[in-house]
Amino acid sequence: MLVGTTIFAQIMNLLPWRRFETCVARYQGDYRVKTFKCAEHFRVMAFAQLTYRESLRDIEACLRAMSSRLYHMGIRSTVSRNNLAHANETRDWRIYADFAQILIDRARALYANEQLGMDLDTTVYALDSTTIDLCMTLFPWARFRKTKSAIKLHTLMNLRGSIPEFIHISDGKMHDVNILDMLAPMPGAFYIMDRAYLDFDRLHRLHLEKAFFVTRTKSNFKFKRRYSHEVDKTTGVQCDQTIILTTHYPAKKYPETLRRVRYYDIERQKRLVFLTNNFQLPAETVAKLYKGRWQIEIFFKWIKQHLRIKSFFGTSENAVKVQIWTAIATYLLVAIMKKELKLDLPLYTILQVLSLSLFEKIPVMEAFSENYMLVESDENCKQMKLFD
Image (cartoon, rainbow, N blue to C red):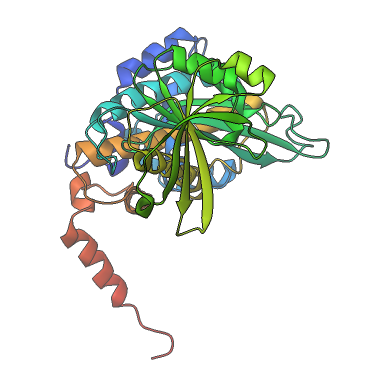
């Protein structure tokens, strides 16, 4: 890292800008654009995510207050509400989606050796979606209900490192199970899903692709037991069965045997029934795999709390998707920075430090050093207390 450059410029240098320009050229993002090109647009949107800006006016005011440092941050054009709003409306969102995919590949390689918390060498994915409610008057294109609009983020997350490897943004009416048609299953990988994805035709396609799935059954699930296997009930596993489907259409769509595992969760005082096409794993591991699915719920909660994806800077479909994809790219950038700089801090802490120190001209590692953070806390302690 170069001493004398802002922390923002230093972390932007971690990005593969040549590959970003390839994405821009693919969709002619800078065609007839003289000022405020896509690279500057991305930097401004990343700044908005890292510093928790609330609106276009907020972004404009903050950057103009630091106008003397913008050139060295890679922002050479005047940042105004009109420029930024126009860029959000007209720059193809696929530029930022493709660039986010490049960052996903890089993050996946960095987190490939992360521990799963169980003795399993293969890749494990959690598939789920989250809904972001919108105002129907401002976002009429995002169909959901008669009186409300919404969009869905369908996400396939690698549980090693909590890296989202596939994201699809749809309107609120798209059913979760349809996302299975868009996936290219990886042979040998596990796909952990809740009951919304219980479609036996699509699950059978996963099975034919040599991929494994773990999901839950519905209350009206009909089956016939073929075999019962011995279980250790002290682990919470109540039964482990080989079954076939008996209802006409499900049996026709999935004609092969399935494995049914019933598990009692002592913490939640709840009985859970799982279905899987894997017959080799211990029954307790099947239950642990499904429990790992909660990581994607935590991921959704985290990005909604710490990234700007619930309130938007524009109302068009393109503007919303640009903001979401730049938010995902910012999340991935922080995750990459954590690994490449070997920071032993949670992502939340890294974001908090960055939000307050982006304009500092110190080496980025110094901002996360214990001595620097201790000096900052000591200075804050010198402030007089109101009720002393």
